[in-house]
Image (cartoon, rainbow, N blue to C red; front, top):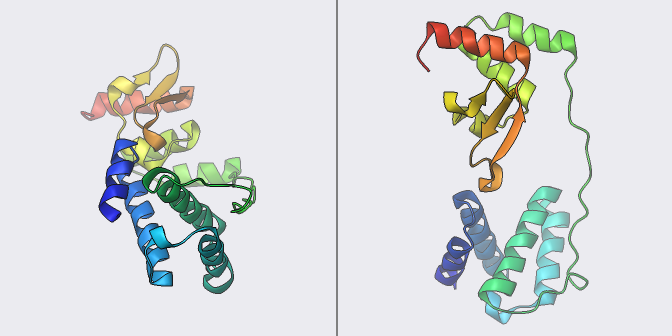
Length: 181
């Protein structure tokens, strides 16, 4: 079943991290009851998710991740019906992001002496990039005419555009003059 679920995840083009997480979740579920998931159903799934919440104290995002993994296992690999009314998903708390003040941002930028590092931090902060997105940026992704940055294969293998700040463009241009990208 492990191999079949692995193939199903690859066919659906899930990211390598998601694949390994889902496979580990399936293995953990089976080990918890010491049974094959094929021999289990809604009752065991509810018990397992409840165990993770109450006894293990795992986060809501981990519970939702396990839920999604089990849902994929039962719906796709085992070809069983999944009833969201019988097996409820954990309600996620909505949290506001931490927004730094202008003084805090200026403090970060002023203490960063290396211009290249400063430009990276400025690009990440002003454009709302993830670290992995920033690490994969190329000069060709910067469009100074439209003041945008192209993000290729970001989270979920999705492409997107984000804004490029004028000040950030100036800093990036300084780097391109001094250093080869």
